Length: 601
Image (cartoon, rainbow, N blue to C red; front, side, top):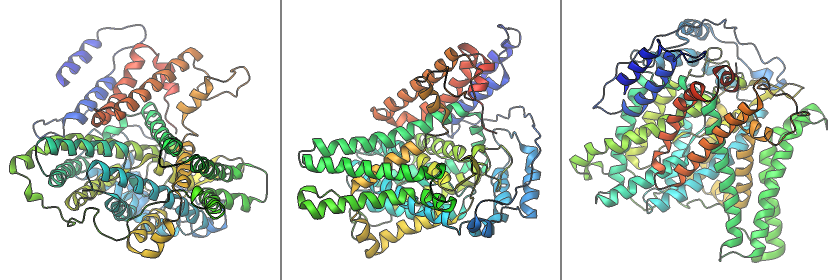
């Protein structure tokens, strides 16, 4: 594959088509995709170092959050330490690193830029906005953990269930918040991981193998490959992804959250065990939660009340939405009795495995040939976790959020190598005790970043509070729900329709700023009176074609995810990068696609 691609590039230097010439960049994208899908196998060995073009950019030192409000201004310490500044300036020479770097270089660079700021990562998290973000994201992270736990229990026949999922979320979340280079990323389970585990269960049944030992060995191999990728800075492959891929992936995750919430509400009307009254109350509670959270979150952009009130109410908007939905459900239960009583959050009563098995998996129960054979499903798991993790971190690192700690200006790769190291270690230990594998969760991570964003008087984002306290607090609270009776008893009083309303809020709140979503809405706007967008210079037919291609890719990803071949979902994501660069060689001119697909600076 690489040899054929190289020959096509060589020939292209002698063939011109209009104003376009096949570029080395296209070859590098195709080769990067091939390396991503194949290099994990021990049977393949690649030595691929593309020519590096160094882009030198002026790097201005971070400034204090001078107008972020009294509480944040008091504790903010964004001024980098001498060591951090030196590390950033030293790293500017590697603005465009090769696909693979020397041993430990990427990890060392990430930690040299971030660890000197650890003290400020603590101090900057002690304010009311971080408290509001913690309250909001606690529910936003606990609800998917419980939901995914129930689904895991169903597909694994109780081998991995709700207790394992919630425990993994709490433990891994705390460790990640303390040790990662990008602590604003929230890790959790995802739909593709669930689909992969379901496939692994069927494989174990078909081959008459014990599931948990097979799961453990698959995870051990996966963690080893991820470790190798972090040590060699393989996350540099993500530099070939563009806004085109980011927007499709982000829209997909938002779509999943909204659709799952809508389906859950719909089942309350169609379920024979339910009634029309319960269905109607489910709809009312979910919609009330959603609209309360959305309305209060948008209060910061209005002229009502004082600036301080607008800011605090907006920050606590999602939490107040949960409270409003819970109060409505409580009122209905008290006034109407059992006829209007809604199902509530289900959390295990004791700290033990779902099936009562020992925590440590007997990995030696798997035959020797199967231990080695587990590397085959591990290759697919590696692609899945690698892409899920890095695409989400890339979205979190987007320059539009104006983060400055431990990163070079405009660079979206900073922190990825160190974070992949942490993910590989967590994958290893969770595999040994039969806990679900966790990676960066897109919607929860973006919601976390936006909950910590600081806006000016015009409603424009001017900075983000970069710290470790919220991630640590969120997952510590989830851990408390596992270990202690009183927090658990309180949470079991929260109706699930409240969480469905919160799911809808999570899905829709991640869409603003997504240009694919803005262009979809633009298809129904009168261009004569609509405000001019950033891509207004591109002909409307070209913009419509580009958007239609993104929609088609989104539909294909949804189809694959829901089909029996859902385990191939990460392969579809990997193919988006070469598809994007193929577009500029075929149907859309490079000049136009560069405008439509331009990354934020």
